[in-house]
Length: 127
Image 1 (tube, rainbow, N blue to C red):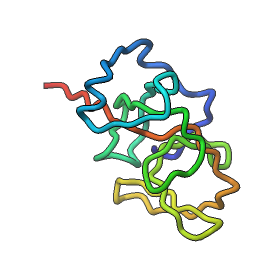
Image 2 (spheres, rainbow, N blue to C red):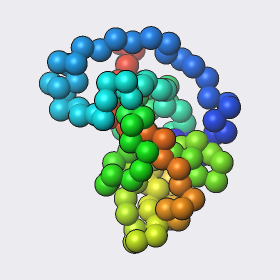
Image 3 (cartoon, helix red, strand yellow):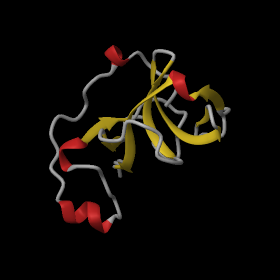
């Protein structure tokens, strides 16, 4: 999200969360293994509307490759990003920002390291 960040700059916002498996099932969330689930915090505005700045995001760290169109946590040219990925051709992916103010970017598949797939956004809104 946003312009990316160097992974060392990432700050911890949430330390511990317990979610009942039934809740994930009710929401249609499938994952590789319970031990692979993690919660991170979104940052920036590029995915705004889907993932807003500081939204908690549940990810599956067991997904380390492109498994079809979806939203992934990835590193590209040294920046940590959350982007929607879509296959462009055999050797390239589109890195797509859901915020229409950002243009999609073409990336060589070999230049992208996938760390996790985004499963669920925990949209917390102040009322």
